[in-house]
Amino acid sequence: KHSSILIIDEMSSGVGTSKVSWNHIGLHSASVGSLILTPSFLQWASSSTSNDDTVVTTKKIPAANIKGCMWSVFGRTGYLRVQIKPGSDVRASEWRLDGFPEQDYSKVCDAFESLYNIKVSKKNVSSGGASFGTTDINNGFLVFRESILAEEEGEAEGGEEIISLELAEVSQCVLPGNNRNEIEIQFHESDTVEQGTDQLVQIRFYVPPDPEADPTDKESSTAAELMQQAIVTQASIRSSTGNVIVKFDETQGTFLTPRGRYTIELFYKYLRLRGNKYDYKIKYDDISRLFLLPKPDDYHMAFVIALDKPIRQGQQRYQYLVMQTNKSPSELEILLDEETLQKEYGGELQPLMQGSLSNLVAKTFKVVTKKKVFVPGKFASANQHACVKCALRANEGHLYPLEKQFVFIHKPAVLIRFDEIESVEFQRFSGNAGSTRNFDLCVALISSGAELGTKEYVFSGIDRSDYAALYSFLSGKRIRIKNLQGGGMDGEGTGVVQPLYEEADRAEAATLDDD
Image: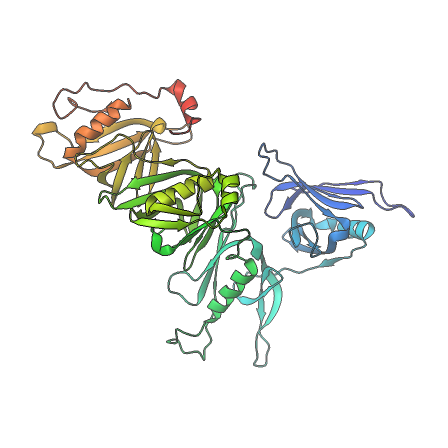
């Protein structure tokens, strides 16, 4: 869409423009809206409406904080970069705006010179399609330019800009796998973009090694490793603000999903996972549920963190974080004084806490994040465990029937709420007369209008001794059971069980928290 410009109080002799505005202007990391220039400030207002109070729909730069302005044209669209003076109240160092008609350059120049006494400079952007060049990391930006080779032997010089990345938007910068000559940069995903809009979430750079360096030397840093260190420093990926409330060392638990060892640090509003390669910052508002699930060995425990916004490692997303800990007696130091603990957390935490490690992890998360921790209820398998061993597709794991949901761990971790289930079906089971040692449980979900067909989860290879416990549990929950063929192990089944969650009740059930 082309922008439309509206000029009020046009310039006349001795009188400057009082207000200039453009519509359909996009602001980087936000959405599309209107740009308004007045003698006092420069303002962008989103054209989308939101009921979320945390979504900023208007941004403003005071006139005194505008440092400079650059104009670029790519295709038929004009782009504007507004530089902001350091130390101002505006957190960003630069605004990037797009959607200007190419012919509006003179109007933009007149407006900025008249209102702010700033000359708009032209900045050429490379459009030749080159994918190699030189990099410059400075002032919080990574700038990738065309590589211009001189006729005489010497280093390549940077030409026109190919891409410019604001490092404040970088969430991860790692060397993927064992490759010491590549870096992978991941970016925060914005919630404010319009539906269906593409976002840049990842980019990789290949950094050629020094031809004179010894490839077998593992001690010296490669060019890619040096570049990664510079990006991490400028992007402040590993820095944190505020005081750590409690810290769990990587030796106190191993993450099964995503696999690896991470140190956990809990702050007031968020937690950090620090690993050898990946660091994550997770807000407590993005945590939907917490689970503490016992493993069949009666020693290890699985602590599951369910997220509304999955974390990413390369192309893989993880919505459920599964940490394996244990029941060994432990002590945990809370890094706050008693007065602060009493004021902030009502005395539920003490400066020094003792108990099993798994319970200390669960209780600390519950109090600090203010989220419930769900544990198994009345279900017990034939071996008196809270789960049954099975497989989902080709991955073995354990299925936990909880009071209002199924949880399967660990790969892939799956959570199925009972109010999402259309029916369940016992497959490959023939009662006492059967010769098979295992059976499958097929869970069919309620299909939405947007989906074609019914989504199913098949938990296979469940020991036939667990049939009676599962049948009794599902019957008690009044979940619709298909294809019983006589029912339970004693041959006295009642056939199809009427569902507890009728259509009229599902909307209400969806608004209730588990208890």
